Length: 94
Image (cartoon, rainbow, N blue to C red; front, side):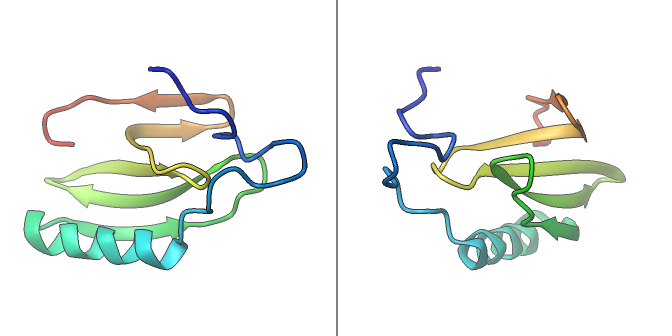
């Protein structure tokens, strides 16, 4: 995947992309949770040491994390998030 310039949030002093809105991410997660019948456990909007928001969900008895980059609208799914070690998944349930 070719990532766009500025996806990390760093640039030459001026933002390249508008920041992804936390409330919009939260709203989309709740809308999807109603359709797919999963429970949202918690949200993490703290950007210290990372550049993505997290929605931790419980789906069919398993914990899954929905990640969205705070600077660029790209989403991923992970089963585990530890500093410098994110276990991404392409599980069909995700």
